[in-house]
Image 1: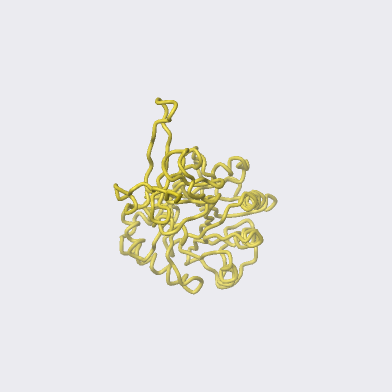
Image 2 (image 1 turned 90 degrees about the vertical axis):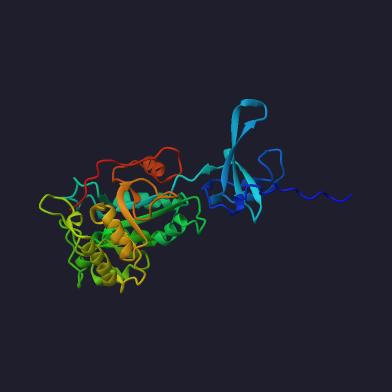
Length: 344
């Protein structure tokens, strides 16, 4: 007797032609069903720790409880519709992009204890240890860009690490930790403050990396722009970027790209100085050739976000590891730190 072939659902709604609706995230090996029914044939499995594109989502009444609904995700499996039980996976809550600025050991930190953006070396190492041990992959902003454009499938456990300003303390303390862990990060550099020669270490001031230090750390850091002359405050203690013309802002961003090109010819990404931006600044960033721009507004990066207004997360030096784990994880609750006080 000839075996009957599987009859896959017809794509009458042309869902295979539709753009990705969302991503699901797997934590373990997950069955793929022929139909939206647990009794239907299992036709394959998704690997654990995977983000997979979803075409649409449907709800069905539970067979033995008409008052309850079950959720199913429809996916494209090799050009045919297939189904994932919503109980087996979770929807993607977004990509965490962590923000750091300044690092000091506690015994050296005499002047920066009042700032939220100065992290202790001990806390930073513990956070990076956690990411490594928990199986998180550090991804580049190229991969974040691909995620937003729905061009790549990322693992379930990913995090992007960023540093603003280009401070010497990052080279002195963060760089060796990241290198030992084989972790990558983006370094947003204020291009006008790059030093021609290495500075003698002084924990009581904000020192900036030298040309030699930038070149020497490119195996870990993707060097990108934090503006050239716009990282300043006016006499009202407001970012000067708000009082500058569109042309001035665009020229500054473009000039910063040129200055940083010897350290990385692929200048595509910007962190706004002090996180300050508006419509004009966003337009200037795009016109200057930036593909993504990052703010200091807190949250994760999700599909559909404006690429010129991406959110990030601050992990504080006194955050318990349980809180940090929740912050970067894919849980239902969004964990953020409020009232961030930034080093000037």
